[in-house]
Picture (tube, rainbow, N blue to C red):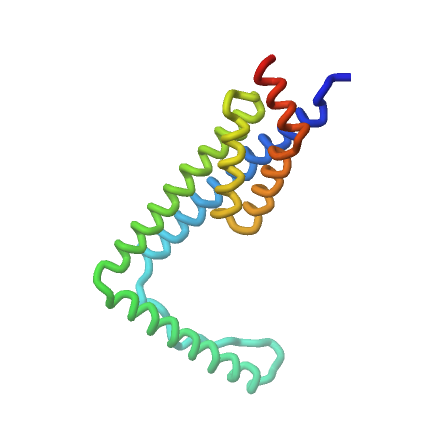
Length: 172
């Protein structure tokens, strides 16, 4: 039986988890950024209808008119917010810059995450340290799923047998 077989499997799973998680993050960032930029550049408050009505097939006019009133109030409120947003100078440009910078930072971190996963799979020099940094970044920046990925990473990388596996692999 090969020594450290379980630890080798754990490290391989962690490397694959990093690659999958950060690849998914890149895809979701691209979709979100594209959607936000499209909606900001095509936002025109004059084309928004404030006379929205809700039709139902239930035959109840009071239900339909009640929903219609709420829909009108919601549209008027959103129109006033959009008008206030457009009245600020350079608002669209600032929002676009913030979206692009944030997306760029997360994309760089995600690319480093994919590189870290590959380093763990290949057991490259410094891959354990790289894994620590990625786990910490995942916990801080990537929300609930990133917290889970980061905790799993730290759990695997701080395990005594995994540390021994990395030490044995370093001097092999």
